[in-house]
Image (cartoon, rainbow, N blue to C red; front, side, top):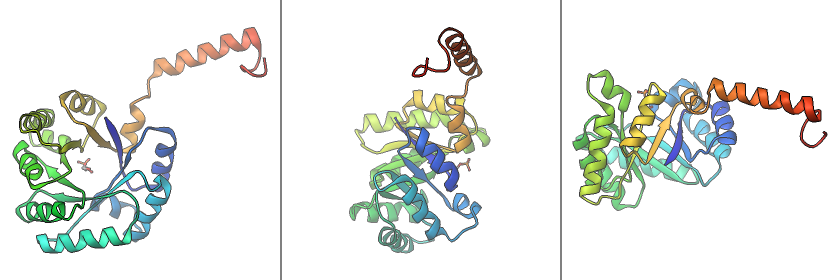
Length: 223
Ligand code: G3P
């Protein structure tokens, strides 16, 4: 399982990258716009924070496949390190996925609401598919079921495309998609921090420390 940060906030990325087992950063137009900065400068700063080896995902906004291919080449020439472009699974998007995959540019097929969209994207050559779990749930669908169906398709048809599940509102959804076969997930910083926040752990740690100090003094080295 690999974990990505779904944010473009430099301070949050810096913190999570230092403390958590992070494999990269995913962005989309809304996430970039939120930071209110020139997007290329921001993406370059994210790259500087996470280093060249971790994956950085940038979503394309062109209307036609040709525009998307041009944008993908622009992103590849402007940014360094391990990159992938995100392309929504529309008809034009599917054509762009085919063209870019032929050029060996890694593509994440995004804004996925059905297992068939994921299947088409995988057949077109996408490296990743991103089912939008919470947005599916909001439409009275079942995001976890969609992830599980995608996992079954990929296994039956021996497709190497990975599921990068996205759009979560709570940790339970993430827990469930991991069990349903998502190889990777991307989550907002506040959700990632909730993965390990458990009051009982904090209270156990406090009790251990107090007992230690009573018996031995300040800490392990200066006792
Ligand atoms: O990575 C996809 C994601 O950013 C969409 O999430 O929370 O806006 O539905 P959300």
